Length: 201
Image 1 (cartoon, helix red, strand yellow):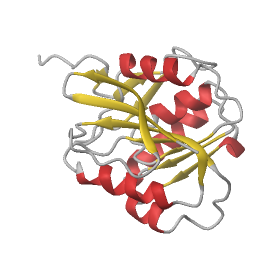
Image 2 (cartoon, helix red, strand yellow):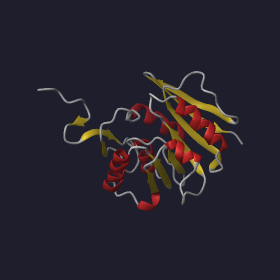
Image 3 (spheres, helix red, strand yellow):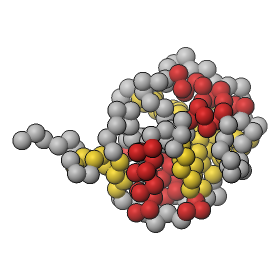
Image 4 (cartoon, one colour):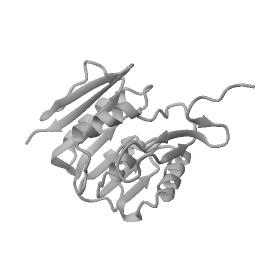
């Protein structure tokens, strides 16, 4: 009988664990998909050590949400609101189901089942306010999205003046940072490079 990969059951698909905050140790389920690779526990732990464990009052945008674990970790740590952008309607539905299982208040999150390029080119009607933190973890097979997203953020009127941007993936060493963006922290895990960028006033 074939073995089942760790963290996965045939009936439930893939799973990932929340590592901190109010929902610590709760598990999220999401459908298997080629480009869906949740941020590993160790990288998330490092990220929230950088940011601080309490994100009370922060407004967060997860532009390539996938499982949504980064945005949900932010909610678990008190973020005021998180916007999730996920191109797959099936994955977006599973994200909505996970937030319902966690009893996440509806006013604290919004899920858009749409292409991230379309979102940043023309934010949906009803979106307003400044974003304090952006998660950028595009599919590994589309590394060009990372540079495009960074360039778009640099011009976005909704990005807070002191915003932070977390970049994860096979980011090339030649990644061009837009004006006023600087690397404040950096780490590597396997073939993935993670950066925390800050926007200088």
